[in-house]
Length: 92
Image (tube, rainbow, N blue to C red; front, side, top):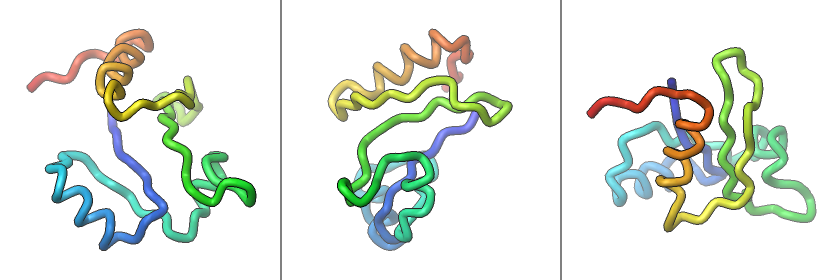
């Protein structure tokens, strides 16, 4: 299993953000918003990316999209959804 975040900010901004939070996973930059547009999280009417989480299977197909992300509870929500999808827990 792999996980990462995608932001429409520049690589420099994302690097500073990741360092400030001690993020231990890749934070990809999409300042041109090409990927964000392809996934529907930005468009002409919404120039800022929505906080959505995409669960993508090993075959590349989207299994589920969480469009109601709350930063305060997102970790728990992700863990619950991964369990529901049958993804084994990661060992520490």
